[in-house]
Amino acid sequence: MVILVFILGYLFITLENLFSLNKVIPSILMAVTCWSLILLFHLPVYELDQHLIIKKDPKHLLLFHLAKASEIVFFLIGAMSIIAVIEKYSGFEALRELFYAKTKRKFLWIISLVSFLLSAIIDNLTASIVLISLLRKTISNYKERLYYLGIVIISANAGGVWSPIGDITTTMLWISNKVTTIYLIKKILIPSILCMCVSTFIASCLPIFNGSFQIKKNELSKDHLKRGFFMLKTGLLLMLLVPIYKIITGVPPYMGMMFSLGILLCVVKKYKSECSIDDFFKKLDFSSILFFLGILLSVSSLESLGKLYNLSSWINETVSTWKITTFIFGLISSIIDNVPLVAATIAMFSYPMDHDLWHFIAYVSGTGGSIFLIGSAAGVAAMGMEKIDFFWYLKKISWIALIGYISGFIYLLI
Image 1: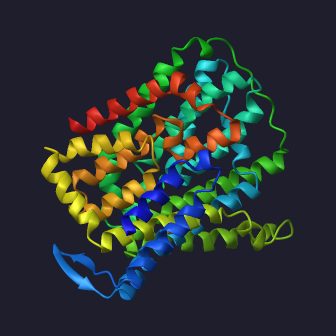
Image 2: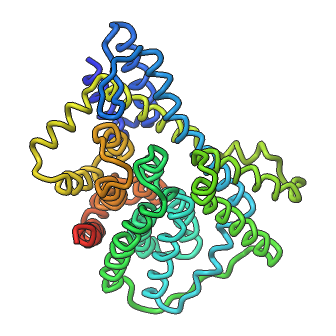
Image 3: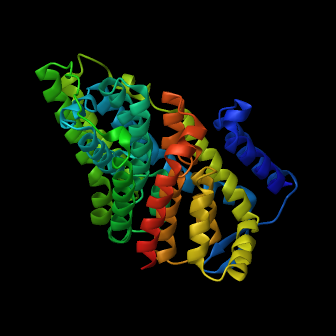
Protein backbone atom coordinates (compact mmCIF):
# COMPACT_ATOMS: atom_id res chain seq x y z
CA MET A 1 0.00 0.00 0.00
CA VAL A 2 2.85 2.41 0.83
CA ILE A 3 4.46 1.64 -2.55
CA LEU A 4 1.18 2.41 -4.33
CA VAL A 5 0.90 5.77 -2.54
CA PHE A 6 4.50 6.58 -3.50
CA ILE A 7 3.91 5.67 -7.17
CA LEU A 8 0.74 7.79 -7.36
CA GLY A 9 2.44 10.74 -5.65
CA TYR A 10 5.47 10.43 -7.91
CA LEU A 11 3.18 10.37 -10.95
CA PHE A 12 1.51 13.62 -9.91
CA ILE A 13 4.94 15.22 -9.33
CA THR A 14 6.27 14.13 -12.72
CA LEU A 15 3.14 15.25 -14.58
CA GLU A 16 2.54 18.45 -12.62
CA ASN A 17 2.05 20.52 -15.80
CA LEU A 18 -0.57 18.07 -17.09
CA PHE A 19 -2.56 18.14 -13.84
CA SER A 20 -1.88 21.86 -13.18
CA LEU A 21 -0.93 20.88 -9.64
CA ASN A 22 2.09 22.33 -7.87
CA LYS A 23 4.44 19.45 -7.07
CA VAL A 24 4.74 20.51 -3.42
CA ILE A 25 1.15 19.29 -2.82
CA PRO A 26 1.61 15.62 -3.83
CA SER A 27 5.07 15.66 -2.22
CA ILE A 28 3.75 16.62 1.23
CA LEU A 29 0.65 14.41 1.03
CA MET A 30 2.75 11.46 -0.12
CA ALA A 31 5.17 11.82 2.81
CA VAL A 32 2.45 12.12 5.45
CA THR A 33 0.38 9.27 3.99
CA CYS A 34 3.31 6.86 3.70
CA TRP A 35 4.39 7.32 7.31
CA SER A 36 0.78 7.35 8.54
CA LEU A 37 0.22 3.92 6.98
CA ILE A 38 3.39 2.62 8.65
CA LEU A 39 2.26 3.85 12.08
CA LEU A 40 -1.43 2.95 11.64
CA PHE A 41 -0.85 -0.66 10.59
CA HIS A 42 2.29 -1.14 12.74
CA LEU A 43 4.37 -2.12 9.70
CA PRO A 44 7.85 -3.38 10.62
CA VAL A 45 10.60 -0.87 9.80
CA TYR A 46 14.35 -1.34 9.74
CA GLU A 47 17.60 0.61 9.71
CA LEU A 48 20.68 -0.51 7.81
CA ASP A 49 23.65 -0.01 10.13
CA GLN A 50 27.05 -1.17 8.84
CA HIS A 51 25.40 -3.87 6.68
CA LEU A 52 23.28 -5.03 9.65
CA ILE A 53 19.50 -4.79 9.28
CA ILE A 54 18.12 -3.70 12.67
CA LYS A 55 14.43 -3.52 13.50
CA LYS A 56 13.45 -0.10 14.89
CA ASP A 57 10.52 1.70 16.51
CA PRO A 58 8.68 3.59 13.69
CA LYS A 59 8.38 6.85 15.68
CA HIS A 60 12.08 6.92 16.52
CA LEU A 61 13.01 6.08 12.92
CA LEU A 62 10.74 8.87 11.64
CA LEU A 63 12.53 11.35 13.91
CA PHE A 64 15.87 10.05 12.65
CA HIS A 65 14.93 10.57 8.99
CA LEU A 66 13.37 13.96 9.79
CA ALA A 67 16.70 15.04 11.27
CA LYS A 68 18.56 13.89 8.14
CA ALA A 69 16.09 15.71 5.87
CA SER A 70 16.26 18.85 8.03
CA GLU A 71 20.00 19.14 7.36
CA ILE A 72 19.26 19.65 3.67
CA VAL A 73 16.27 21.91 4.35
CA PHE A 74 18.22 24.30 6.59
CA PHE A 75 21.12 24.27 4.14
CA LEU A 76 18.69 25.40 1.42
CA ILE A 77 17.16 28.09 3.65
CA GLY A 78 20.62 29.54 4.30
CA ALA A 79 21.63 29.43 0.63
CA MET A 80 18.34 30.97 -0.56
CA SER A 81 18.65 33.76 2.03
CA ILE A 82 22.17 34.68 0.86
CA ILE A 83 20.96 34.75 -2.75
CA ALA A 84 18.00 36.95 -1.74
CA VAL A 85 20.40 39.46 -0.15
CA ILE A 86 22.61 39.55 -3.26
CA GLU A 87 19.58 40.03 -5.50
CA LYS A 88 18.13 42.79 -3.30
CA TYR A 89 21.27 44.88 -3.73
CA SER A 90 21.46 44.37 -7.52
CA GLY A 91 24.44 42.01 -7.29
CA PHE A 92 23.31 39.87 -10.20
CA GLU A 93 22.35 42.92 -12.26
CA ALA A 94 25.97 44.04 -12.00
CA LEU A 95 26.96 40.82 -13.83
CA ARG A 96 25.85 42.42 -17.08
CA GLU A 97 29.09 44.41 -17.04
CA LEU A 98 30.88 41.13 -17.82
CA PHE A 99 28.78 40.46 -20.91
CA TYR A 100 30.86 42.55 -23.31
CA ALA A 101 31.07 40.91 -26.75
CA LYS A 102 31.16 42.07 -30.38
CA THR A 103 29.87 38.83 -31.94
CA LYS A 104 27.00 36.49 -31.09
CA ARG A 105 29.35 33.53 -30.99
CA LYS A 106 31.64 35.18 -28.43
CA PHE A 107 28.64 36.19 -26.34
CA LEU A 108 27.45 32.56 -26.39
CA TRP A 109 30.76 31.40 -24.90
CA ILE A 110 30.67 34.18 -22.28
CA ILE A 111 27.11 33.39 -21.18
CA SER A 112 27.89 29.66 -21.14
CA LEU A 113 31.01 30.15 -19.00
CA VAL A 114 29.24 32.52 -16.58
CA SER A 115 26.37 30.06 -16.27
CA PHE A 116 28.81 27.20 -15.61
CA LEU A 117 30.78 29.03 -12.92
CA LEU A 118 27.82 30.77 -11.28
CA SER A 119 25.82 27.54 -10.90
CA ALA A 120 28.74 25.93 -9.06
CA ILE A 121 28.34 28.54 -6.31
CA ILE A 122 24.67 29.50 -6.11
CA ASP A 123 23.20 26.25 -7.60
CA ASN A 124 22.02 25.59 -11.15
CA LEU A 125 18.38 26.58 -10.64
CA THR A 126 19.18 30.03 -9.23
CA ALA A 127 21.91 30.61 -11.82
CA SER A 128 19.44 29.83 -14.60
CA ILE A 129 16.80 32.18 -13.19
CA VAL A 130 19.38 34.97 -12.82
CA LEU A 131 20.68 34.55 -16.39
CA ILE A 132 17.18 34.28 -17.85
CA SER A 133 16.33 37.63 -16.24
CA LEU A 134 19.57 39.19 -17.53
CA LEU A 135 19.11 37.79 -21.05
CA ARG A 136 15.64 39.35 -21.21
CA LYS A 137 17.25 42.74 -20.73
CA THR A 138 20.12 41.98 -23.12
CA ILE A 139 18.59 40.17 -26.11
CA SER A 140 15.32 41.50 -27.49
CA ASN A 141 14.94 38.89 -30.26
CA TYR A 142 12.88 36.07 -28.69
CA LYS A 143 13.99 33.37 -31.13
CA GLU A 144 17.68 34.11 -30.57
CA ARG A 145 17.16 34.28 -26.82
CA LEU A 146 15.72 30.75 -26.76
CA TYR A 147 18.91 29.29 -28.25
CA TYR A 148 21.02 31.09 -25.66
CA LEU A 149 18.71 29.78 -22.93
CA GLY A 150 19.13 26.23 -24.19
CA ILE A 151 22.90 26.49 -23.68
CA VAL A 152 22.38 28.20 -20.31
CA ILE A 153 20.39 25.17 -19.11
CA ILE A 154 23.08 22.72 -20.28
CA SER A 155 25.96 24.77 -18.82
CA ALA A 156 24.18 25.45 -15.52
CA ASN A 157 23.44 21.75 -15.01
CA ALA A 158 27.03 20.85 -15.94
CA GLY A 159 28.42 23.50 -13.59
CA GLY A 160 26.34 22.31 -10.68
CA VAL A 161 27.54 18.71 -10.63
CA TRP A 162 31.19 19.27 -9.66
CA SER A 163 30.47 21.51 -6.68
CA PRO A 164 28.96 20.31 -3.38
CA ILE A 165 26.75 23.42 -3.32
CA GLY A 166 26.03 23.60 -7.07
CA ASP A 167 23.09 21.20 -7.35
CA ILE A 168 20.59 19.96 -4.79
CA THR A 169 21.37 16.34 -5.70
CA THR A 170 25.13 16.89 -5.27
CA THR A 171 24.41 18.65 -1.97
CA MET A 172 22.35 15.62 -0.89
CA LEU A 173 25.28 13.31 -1.65
CA TRP A 174 27.65 15.63 0.21
CA ILE A 175 25.48 16.02 3.32
CA SER A 176 24.81 12.26 3.34
CA ASN A 177 28.60 11.68 3.52
CA LYS A 178 28.72 9.92 0.16
CA VAL A 179 31.23 12.35 -1.39
CA THR A 180 33.85 14.79 -0.13
CA THR A 181 34.53 18.18 -1.66
CA ILE A 182 38.09 17.50 -2.83
CA TYR A 183 37.36 14.15 -4.48
CA LEU A 184 34.12 15.43 -6.02
CA ILE A 185 35.96 18.28 -7.75
CA LYS A 186 38.86 16.01 -8.70
CA LYS A 187 36.59 13.40 -10.32
CA ILE A 188 33.79 15.51 -11.84
CA LEU A 189 35.31 18.87 -12.81
CA ILE A 190 36.88 17.77 -16.10
CA PRO A 191 33.84 15.70 -17.29
CA SER A 192 31.53 18.63 -16.50
CA ILE A 193 33.82 21.08 -18.35
CA LEU A 194 33.87 18.65 -21.28
CA CYS A 195 30.06 18.45 -21.26
CA MET A 196 29.75 22.25 -21.24
CA CYS A 197 32.48 22.91 -23.85
CA VAL A 198 31.34 20.23 -26.30
CA SER A 199 27.73 21.41 -26.12
CA THR A 200 28.68 25.08 -26.48
CA PHE A 201 31.04 24.36 -29.38
CA ILE A 202 28.35 22.43 -31.28
CA ALA A 203 25.83 25.21 -30.64
CA SER A 204 28.32 27.88 -31.75
CA CYS A 205 28.44 26.24 -35.19
CA LEU A 206 24.70 26.88 -35.71
CA PRO A 207 23.80 29.67 -38.17
CA ILE A 208 21.75 31.48 -35.49
CA PHE A 209 24.99 32.57 -33.81
CA ASN A 210 26.51 34.19 -36.90
CA GLY A 211 26.82 37.97 -36.98
CA SER A 212 27.63 40.90 -34.70
CA PHE A 213 26.25 41.59 -31.25
CA GLN A 214 25.42 44.75 -29.34
CA ILE A 215 24.49 44.88 -25.64
CA LYS A 216 22.11 47.43 -24.18
CA LYS A 217 23.69 49.80 -21.69
CA ASN A 218 23.25 48.96 -18.00
CA GLU A 219 20.72 51.31 -16.38
CA LEU A 220 22.30 51.13 -12.91
CA SER A 221 24.21 54.16 -11.62
CA LYS A 222 27.92 53.85 -10.82
CA ASP A 223 27.22 53.80 -7.09
CA HIS A 224 24.64 51.02 -7.49
CA LEU A 225 27.01 49.04 -9.73
CA LYS A 226 29.81 49.38 -7.20
CA ARG A 227 27.58 48.25 -4.35
CA GLY A 228 26.14 45.45 -6.49
CA PHE A 229 29.59 44.05 -7.29
CA PHE A 230 30.58 44.29 -3.63
CA MET A 231 27.52 42.35 -2.45
CA LEU A 232 27.94 39.81 -5.26
CA LYS A 233 31.60 39.15 -4.41
CA THR A 234 30.89 39.02 -0.67
CA GLY A 235 27.93 36.67 -1.00
CA LEU A 236 29.66 34.29 -3.41
CA LEU A 237 32.82 34.24 -1.30
CA LEU A 238 30.83 33.36 1.83
CA MET A 239 29.09 30.51 -0.01
CA LEU A 240 32.45 29.22 -1.25
CA LEU A 241 33.67 29.18 2.35
CA VAL A 242 31.01 26.63 3.37
CA PRO A 243 32.88 23.52 2.11
CA ILE A 244 36.17 24.92 3.45
CA TYR A 245 34.56 25.58 6.84
CA LYS A 246 33.34 21.97 6.94
CA ILE A 247 36.82 20.62 6.13
CA ILE A 248 38.49 22.76 8.82
CA THR A 249 35.99 22.44 11.67
CA GLY A 250 34.07 19.29 10.78
CA VAL A 251 30.67 20.92 11.39
CA PRO A 252 27.74 19.85 9.15
CA PRO A 253 27.29 21.89 5.91
CA TYR A 254 24.06 23.52 7.06
CA MET A 255 25.91 25.03 10.05
CA GLY A 256 28.52 26.49 7.72
CA MET A 257 25.82 27.95 5.48
CA MET A 258 24.05 29.53 8.47
CA PHE A 259 27.39 30.95 9.63
CA SER A 260 27.94 32.54 6.20
CA LEU A 261 24.40 33.94 6.26
CA GLY A 262 25.00 35.48 9.67
CA ILE A 263 28.17 37.21 8.47
CA LEU A 264 26.42 38.56 5.34
CA LEU A 265 23.54 39.95 7.41
CA CYS A 266 26.14 41.77 9.54
CA VAL A 267 27.66 43.22 6.37
CA VAL A 268 24.32 44.58 5.09
CA LYS A 269 23.61 46.41 8.36
CA LYS A 270 25.16 49.53 6.87
CA TYR A 271 22.34 49.50 4.26
CA LYS A 272 19.58 48.88 6.84
CA SER A 273 17.88 52.17 5.96
CA GLU A 274 16.86 50.70 2.58
CA CYS A 275 15.29 47.45 3.78
CA SER A 276 14.93 45.25 6.85
CA ILE A 277 16.14 41.70 7.34
CA ASP A 278 12.53 40.50 7.13
CA ASP A 279 12.43 41.65 3.49
CA PHE A 280 15.06 39.06 2.55
CA PHE A 281 13.19 36.15 4.11
CA LYS A 282 9.94 37.10 2.35
CA LYS A 283 11.61 36.16 -0.95
CA LEU A 284 12.43 32.58 0.06
CA ASP A 285 10.89 29.86 -2.10
CA PHE A 286 9.23 27.86 0.67
CA SER A 287 7.32 25.69 -1.82
CA SER A 288 10.64 24.24 -3.05
CA ILE A 289 11.82 23.72 0.52
CA LEU A 290 8.63 21.83 1.43
CA PHE A 291 8.90 19.81 -1.79
CA PHE A 292 12.37 18.58 -0.85
CA LEU A 293 11.21 17.77 2.67
CA GLY A 294 8.25 15.77 1.36
CA ILE A 295 10.37 13.85 -1.16
CA LEU A 296 13.07 12.96 1.37
CA LEU A 297 10.54 11.73 3.95
CA SER A 298 8.64 9.74 1.30
CA VAL A 299 11.78 7.99 0.11
CA SER A 300 12.80 7.34 3.73
CA SER A 301 9.52 5.45 4.29
CA LEU A 302 10.41 3.02 1.49
CA GLU A 303 13.95 2.77 2.83
CA SER A 304 12.64 1.95 6.32
CA LEU A 305 10.38 -0.79 4.97
CA GLY A 306 13.39 -2.38 3.24
CA LYS A 307 11.93 -1.92 -0.25
CA LEU A 308 14.90 0.07 -1.58
CA TYR A 309 17.33 -2.48 -0.16
CA ASN A 310 15.48 -5.22 -2.06
CA LEU A 311 15.49 -3.08 -5.22
CA SER A 312 19.24 -2.49 -5.00
CA SER A 313 19.82 -6.23 -4.59
CA TRP A 314 17.72 -6.90 -7.70
CA ILE A 315 19.62 -4.26 -9.72
CA ASN A 316 23.00 -5.68 -8.65
CA GLU A 317 21.91 -9.17 -9.73
CA THR A 318 20.35 -8.04 -13.03
CA VAL A 319 22.83 -5.43 -14.33
CA SER A 320 26.39 -6.59 -14.96
CA THR A 321 28.05 -3.38 -13.68
CA TRP A 322 26.96 -0.33 -11.71
CA LYS A 323 28.42 1.90 -14.46
CA ILE A 324 25.62 0.81 -16.79
CA THR A 325 23.15 1.44 -13.96
CA THR A 326 24.35 5.02 -13.50
CA PHE A 327 24.19 5.72 -17.25
CA ILE A 328 20.57 4.52 -17.29
CA PHE A 329 19.84 6.63 -14.21
CA GLY A 330 21.14 9.66 -16.09
CA LEU A 331 18.74 9.02 -18.98
CA ILE A 332 15.88 8.51 -16.51
CA SER A 333 16.71 11.82 -14.81
CA SER A 334 16.01 13.57 -18.13
CA ILE A 335 12.37 12.55 -17.77
CA ILE A 336 11.62 12.50 -14.05
CA ASP A 337 12.77 14.69 -11.16
CA ASN A 338 16.32 13.82 -10.14
CA VAL A 339 15.81 14.68 -6.44
CA PRO A 340 13.79 11.56 -5.56
CA LEU A 341 15.98 9.51 -7.91
CA VAL A 342 19.16 10.46 -6.04
CA ALA A 343 17.42 10.19 -2.66
CA ALA A 344 16.45 6.63 -3.56
CA THR A 345 19.98 5.87 -4.82
CA ILE A 346 21.50 7.04 -1.54
CA ALA A 347 19.14 4.74 0.35
CA MET A 348 19.58 1.80 -2.05
CA PHE A 349 23.34 1.44 -2.22
CA SER A 350 25.79 1.11 0.66
CA TYR A 351 29.05 1.84 -1.16
CA PRO A 352 31.67 3.68 0.97
CA MET A 353 32.35 7.41 0.84
CA ASP A 354 33.98 8.65 -2.38
CA HIS A 355 33.32 5.40 -4.20
CA ASP A 356 33.21 6.02 -7.96
CA LEU A 357 29.50 5.14 -8.02
CA TRP A 358 28.64 8.32 -6.10
CA HIS A 359 30.71 10.47 -8.47
CA PHE A 360 28.99 8.88 -11.46
CA ILE A 361 25.59 9.51 -9.83
CA ALA A 362 26.53 13.15 -9.19
CA TYR A 363 27.45 13.62 -12.85
CA VAL A 364 24.57 11.78 -14.53
CA SER A 365 21.79 13.13 -12.30
CA GLY A 366 22.71 16.73 -13.16
CA THR A 367 23.86 16.65 -16.77
CA GLY A 368 21.33 13.97 -17.77
CA GLY A 369 18.56 16.36 -16.77
CA SER A 370 19.51 18.67 -19.65
CA ILE A 371 18.48 16.17 -22.34
CA PHE A 372 14.78 16.98 -21.96
CA LEU A 373 13.39 20.35 -20.88
CA ILE A 374 11.46 18.81 -17.97
CA GLY A 375 14.45 16.85 -16.68
CA SER A 376 15.94 19.55 -14.45
CA ALA A 377 14.80 22.39 -12.22
CA ALA A 378 16.72 24.79 -14.48
CA GLY A 379 14.80 23.57 -17.53
CA VAL A 380 11.43 23.76 -15.80
CA ALA A 381 12.21 27.31 -14.61
CA ALA A 382 13.17 28.36 -18.15
CA MET A 383 10.03 26.74 -19.55
CA GLY A 384 7.88 28.67 -17.11
CA MET A 385 9.63 32.04 -17.39
CA GLU A 386 10.16 32.14 -21.17
CA LYS A 387 7.33 29.82 -22.33
CA ILE A 388 9.78 27.49 -24.08
CA ASP A 389 7.97 24.78 -26.01
CA PHE A 390 8.92 21.23 -25.00
CA PHE A 391 9.05 19.99 -28.60
CA TRP A 392 11.09 22.99 -29.76
CA TYR A 393 13.70 22.14 -27.13
CA LEU A 394 13.53 18.46 -28.09
CA LYS A 395 14.20 19.31 -31.73
CA LYS A 396 16.79 22.09 -31.35
CA ILE A 397 18.66 21.51 -28.06
CA SER A 398 18.17 17.92 -26.80
CA TRP A 399 20.62 16.36 -29.27
CA ILE A 400 23.29 18.89 -28.25
CA ALA A 401 22.71 18.11 -24.56
CA LEU A 402 22.86 14.35 -25.25
CA ILE A 403 26.23 14.63 -27.01
CA GLY A 404 27.59 16.73 -24.14
CA TYR A 405 26.28 14.23 -21.59
CA ILE A 406 27.84 11.24 -23.37
CA SER A 407 31.19 13.01 -23.89
CA GLY A 408 31.57 13.65 -20.16
CA PHE A 409 30.42 10.13 -19.28
CA ILE A 410 32.99 8.60 -21.64
CA TYR A 411 35.72 10.58 -19.88
CA LEU A 412 34.48 9.23 -16.54
CA LEU A 413 34.74 5.68 -17.89
CA ILE A 414 38.26 6.28 -19.12
